[in-house]
Image 1 (cartoon, one colour):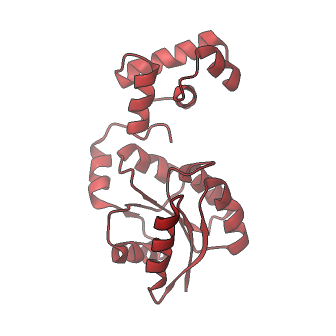
Image 2 (spheres, helix red, strand yellow):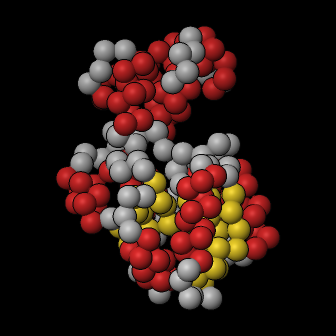
Length: 202
């Protein structure tokens, strides 16, 4: 049996996926979690063969959890299953150690087959998304520019962002100015929206 950990914050979707995957003779959902912070502790406890993660989760994102899983349980194969079909997310997921990236509107038979394939050592990507990723520009933002933009998403003032990130206000302004230029936007709010839409914030 292929043992699966399922991380999905919508309870109805999580339950439906677990039932559908459980109908496959060789698949067993051994754990279900609704937050990102539960993923690694649960995986350490149940030792799944495959972790099937959403990206947007309460606590930490599926991408952050994927990085930690790759470091702490390298034998666990990580797959991303999401509604966010953005090329930037594919790059982030692969860099985080994921070996599969599928969108939620595909048939469950395709998902089951993808789970089997990643366990055989293959990398499985949604075909349309893979093509879009090859065409898309790479993430132009530095790690610090991403941090500052992410911190500005809630409308925080520059002084507040500086305090949270232990930077000076002038340094925050410099990072924001660079990010605004790179995203081709007019202000930090637009820059954060553009970066999030392209999957550049992780």
